[in-house]
Image (tube, rainbow, N blue to C red; front, side):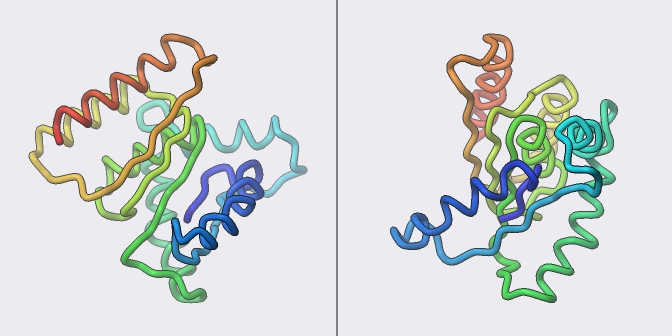
Length: 169
């Protein structure tokens, strides 16, 4: 499981690990957290992550996804007993946006995606439209969620993305 915002979410994912494996809801897995060097302040992380997780033209998610695909995944699969046949990309907020972006931009790189409260903006909707027009199958599982207390337009964008994906089977 590759986790965007590892400095925030690694501990959370690690906390779920024991129950998921014990209850046989998931096989044993490795958690890989994406992070940044710095003084570990939330403000620095937020500034550093923004260009990496935001789809073009707002950000450089395409470039960060290249690094994930060409450097991080090969390193993990060489050094650890990772299963290249089943990779999961998980993210929250802008990290969830990155997970959706990766699902559409590099279909098949990850077989499952978690997008918790993703920011679904125009570039992501345009990418989904382009993917749908290509008539390719989307060989991935997706768990997308949002909170009831989030801004109504923020949740509406997630619902719109879900409706689009569902309508395309």
